Image (cartoon, rainbow, N blue to C red; front, side, top):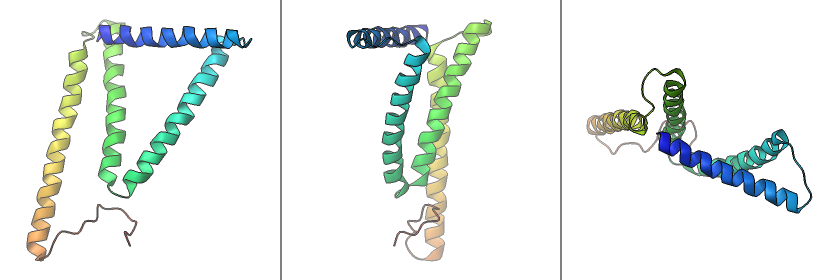
Length: 143
């Protein structure tokens, strides 16, 4: 975990130095706060555009996929926040394997959820005497 944090920190530091040099070449002098405003703002809007396009496409097929992506993102943030909290407070060990085990736990439970969902769909199909409806619970119609 510590090694990953060091690698990420080094990447951010290299980007920071390159960005400052580039701005200096063009005669632009930004404070640290101004640089954060521009870099995070541009990265955020780019990431939003990509995410919006992918989620719009996915929403036509599966709300479960959207929910999974969102949940994984939140779980990753929480897992790393817990690991950082352990380092800061000294309560527990900050280890990358702790983070991966937590994520594996979510993935195992998610697979169980998918198996249950498939089983319920199969039971519904058997008792209705026809093929299972492809509806994923969206309020939208596929017509």
